Every structure is written in structure tokens, then in C-alpha cells.
View 1: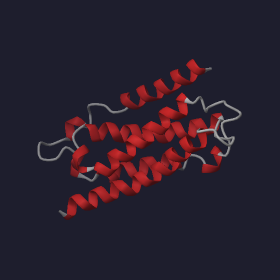
View 2: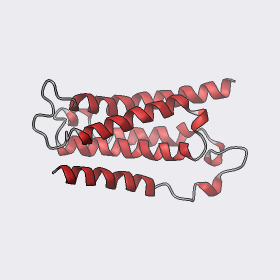
View 3: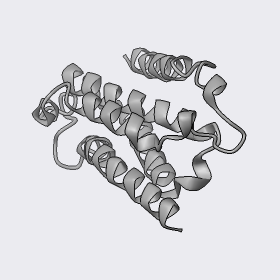
View 4: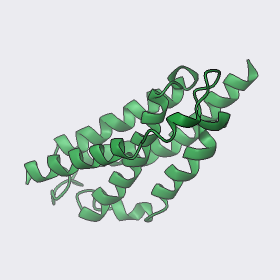
Length: 157
């Protein structure tokens, strides 16, 4: 079971990385590493929100359920794709966003490491799994806000 969960998470990460192709690189200019010069939030806030909207957050009332794990995977994959785009030259303009992505990544890794998926006791008192779920779901909401804050700060000065 542990190997299956690790393999599934590894596959999700590989799919996320594969989704970022070189077609975006062709639209970059030397003066602006963002595709078409638009703020990243215009592209990524709707994508991350769409991943969050695929199911009600109540799907994770049972934090060890397959449905919850699938929901979290969708959010994390969208966040990883954003991270990949930031790695293409925009990290310096998005410090809050980068910090939040690292927290979401850590929560995703810990959800897998603690074998939360499929664990009938994942939601029990003392289990770290509910915190990992909250860090991903609430963290993705905070990420949307922090991305906007990074852009506002960059445009102000």
C-alpha cells in the first residue's frame, strides 16, 4: 500500500512537471520572464480555484478517503505547475507565493509520508493527517491572496 501511494504521488509530480512545456518559453521576452507580460495571478488564480472547486471541501471530512486524496492531488498539481512557472524566472517577484508553495509542498509530502490515504484512523485525534489536509486546502486559498499581494507590492514600487 505504501509503495502504491508513493508511486501515485510520484506520478502526479511527474505529470505536473510534464504539463509545463516549452511552448510557454517561446512567449517570453528578455525584459519580462512572465508569458505575455501578464501577472501570473491572471493565469493561475483561476486554475488553482478550479482545482479547489472540483469538489466541496467536505470531501475531506474523512481525510484518509480516496476522494479526499484525489481532491488534494488536483490542488497540489495546480500548485506545482505554478511553481514550475515561477522557477522559469519569476521567483524574485513572488516571495510570499514561493514561501506558501513550499508549505503546501511540505504538507503534501507529509500526507504521503504519514500514509494518510487509506488510513481509517487518519482523522483520529493525534493523527497529523487533518493538519496536512488543512495546510493544503487553506494554504491554497492563502496562496491566491499572497500572489495578489506580491503583484501589488511589485507594481507599487
